Amino acid sequence: MEWERVREKIIEQVYPEQKELRDARSVYEKISAFIEGEYGLETHFAGSTGRGTCMSGDKDIDLFVLFPRDTERKTIEQQGLTVGKKAFENFDGKYQVEYAEHPYTKGHINGHEVEIVPCYKVSPENIKSAVDRTPHHSKWASENLNQRQKKDAVILKKFLDSGGLYGSSLKVQAFSGYLCEILVAHYGGFKELAEEAENWRENEVIDPENHHEGGLPRALEQKFLDENFVVIDPVDQERNVASVMSAQNYAKVIHRFWQFNKDPSMKFFQEEERRVSQFEVKQEIDRRADFLVMEFERPEAVEDVIYPQMRKTLRRLENVLEEKQFRIFETGFHVGEEKARILLELEASLPEVRKQKGPKVFHGVEHLEQFTEKYENTFIEDERIWAKIDRDHTEAKAFLNDFLSVEVEELEKKGIPDHVAKKIVEFRFTEAVPEDEEWLKYLAEKLNVKENE
Image 1 (spheres, rainbow, N blue to C red):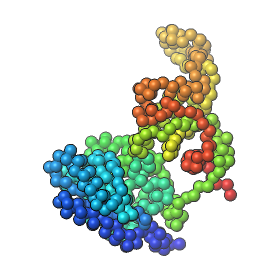
Image 2: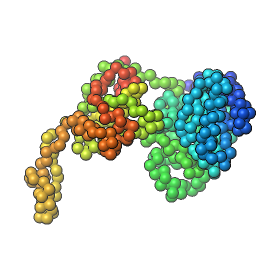
Image 3: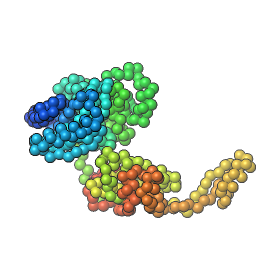
Image 4: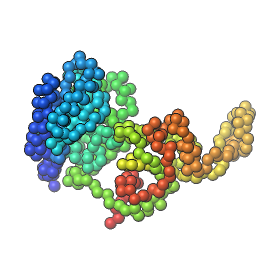
């Protein structure tokens, strides 16, 4: 099927009808009128719903309340919450207070999820807090996307979402909606983007507004050194819109575009249902090395805190296991509603004695003496002196138990982040294939278990 026909089918399925957009704008305008009338503050309809680049069924309304530049930070935080609470109460909406750079209110009004966020009304050059950029992002996208490109931005979001690659939270680490809109505007459309994206390279740099003609300055090269994909923010020349992108997801995106270009069909815009049984996952686990699963209560923090802490914990455990010479083949973690789990596929048992390599005998007596002073049980093999050393731990399970069986404060000193440390201190080893459906799905994807025909 030619691309234009496929494109029309996707639009029918994922692009919102005009009524959806009108309803959302109507709710925004009512809230905006209340805020402007009661407090004399200007508002801005941000987010993909405000820009007309949301997927069908997305009823989010991001309403930004613009405070004068000279407003004190404490005032903006206090009054921003007051404005939000009063707005929800005026429309009989339920709300809660959330926390980002400023506290803000989030809840529901007339069937729409509404966020009322305070920010400063400043130019892009005079940003005082991260949220101040958002109105400028909306303005840039509105000015640089025509109607066809808005639809292509939604197509891109669906393409990524179907592959588990849409979202800029620290849980997902992939593409934000704004990043999608920038790329569509930069390349001209979804298909043009797809054709170029399969050739993206490691540390690719895209600068849509040519802020840095001739290449990034040295200071920004250093700033973005560890970032896998660099897209310079059109409204902030020192910011990378793709900074949260993980190396794994960047590689997956390039691969997905390459696959799509070979066969530009509907299958790339449909959720992939991976239906596997415990038996199939267990079969795969039995084929592999030893599996250890550490289970503990979900840390008490928001996702943008939990996920970086779980990644740091996993890296720390990998490092200490490798220091003890346990070979690691695969690792991962999963955070469920109530439990968190760490997965380790490794060589779980080691010989009681290990060999420590020393210098060649031809390197001089001084080196031999230094080695034999340090180690007792030495021998010569392949022109080199070696030592036999008894291991402290031969079992990975026992080592992990010893490493983690300390007070929370000691765990933190060992490199385990605070929220995870408070829970992992009471971990237990469990079976790799429990009845938990989400954990089963995670294992199936992690281990690439295919559904039996």
